Image 1: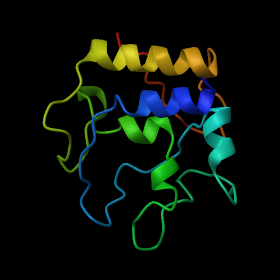
Image 2 (image 1 turned 180 degrees about the horizontal axis):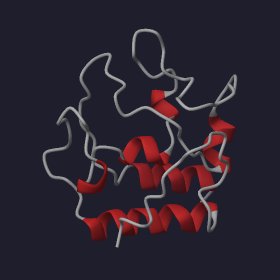
Image 3 (image 1 turned 30 degrees about the horizontal axis):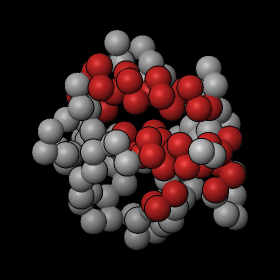
Length: 126
């Protein structure tokens, strides 16, 4: 199984939910793994906010968004500031396991870090 296939299988384990249309309250500097960054066409320079948020508030790369974007709002340590989320939040152990699986694919760091000021999830997921 390729890394891309393993990432897709991991993404399928993450609960999904509907965001408020046009909202981008959770969008900010995002770490990408090498594999995730390789999927992004027309790469843009990153700064303190995500350059893939369109003027409409929609995500330009939503279908190929990285792990951190996918897990935001799915567990207590990263709740949506507007109260959106899946019917059942992940517990810390579940998030820790997902993060461990992700890190097992991309190595000890979170991979490519095209932006600054990222907070580490690993401190909270114990």
